[in-house]
Amino acid sequence: MYANRVNKGNYGYFFVAPFFIVFLLFGLYPILYSFYLSLTNWDGLNNPEFIGLANYSRAFVDPLFLKSLFNTFFIWSVSVIPQLTISLILAVILNNRFLKGKDFFRAVYFFPNIVTAASLGLLVSLMFDWQTGSVNQFLMSVGVIDSAVDWKNNPLFMQILVSSILFFQYFGYSMLIYIAGLQGISPEFEESARVDGASKTQIFFKITIPLLKPIIIFQVITSLIGGVQIFDQPYMLTEGSGAPDNATLTSVMYLYRTAFEQGRFGYGATIAFCLFIIIVTLSSLSYLIARERSRSKISLKEN
Image (tube, rainbow, N blue to C red):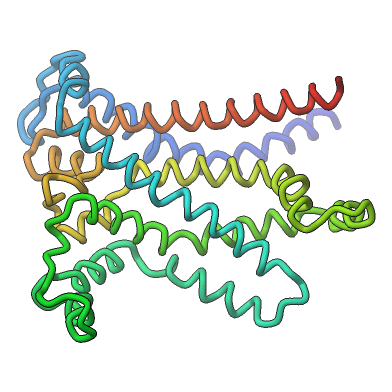
């Protein structure tokens, strides 16, 4: 009887095996092979030439790669702060059970997330075209400007424009995540606070925000991972040029340009691994900082 139980217990390995097989073939193996390529000089045709850490040494002093990192984090930071803030406010409002039509507004706010990033980038690019764009046509028709403005020739404006596209596309998704977190908070906390005389503002900052901290950490980490991989919106907005002055050249755009346009696959793999290290490091730091703050608050309450 014991042997039969052991044999039946082994059946579970057959159910989990497909996941690990797929991960090994299409996940772990490409990662390891890419790391090997990052140690070589390879043009995609000839045999890879092993050069050790030369590509990594080059990446640390590559001004274009460093600029692409700065552009990426600047665009991400300008986008994520209003995105997480406004989506939280909307989530609190639309989580009100007495609000009429809240399901409609949830769907409307989430709709931009359904549209592909490339489509949004192309649409905004056409809108801000200095010759035929609808923005210039509208501003000239109402008398705000006298002649067409070349919006795409302003580096700072283009960076903010990419951030705005990211905000517009993902704030609805963040709102739904917050709503799910709010619905997981027991209404007893709010009712007890009201009995004690707490105002809505005090309930929001003293009860809602602390209880939503795991959701906020999740939002920050996932947005950070996605932010480092920004590609579609700036690529379609500038037709891959990153102009003006490479202001919208993100790290993944530079990776694509290096590997697939210039044929330097070894250096492209190095950029990919640098981004991987950055993502892992920043995500770990965000998690550790948030956990340390939670522990410090708990210790203060106990004392």
